[in-house]
Image (cartoon, rainbow, N blue to C red; front, side):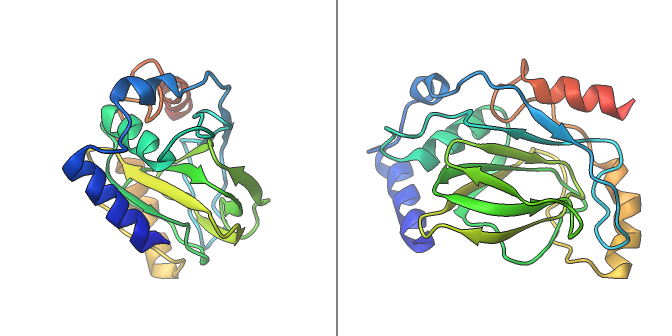
Length: 203
């Protein structure tokens, strides 16, 4: 499925066919209260000591979209969150110690554990957006066959993938606090709740 999505994305970018306009993408956004949570380090997964994980439930209307993944790509890109990809979420625990990440659920549903092996899994479904500050552990426990995610990153930071070794953990505790906060919410732009949440928590 992910190969087909890559082909579809490439075709949209070359021809413009089936790709929603920026106005259509913005019109798909619904006001939603952010659900925020700080996860503690567990000795294996550092999580982020200052910035909360944020989840917007049903923030993007995807039901009637010809290509829901494209909606997320356009929204994220408009807010400066780029290097986007279409795939699922890995079924093993991992985190990024040098960059933040946003995950938009374009299709299907899944049970995902954010915050490390001691955290309570959450159900995510099409239309949801999860914003993971650097260090946040995550892995997919179970997903529907049509589960599709669009991921993206702020314009600064360096992508890495850590899987929970002690050496990674010690390095991450140094690098995570150094990761710059974004200047825009990946969904709502400069007026988004993320900026206020992360400013408030980081003080």
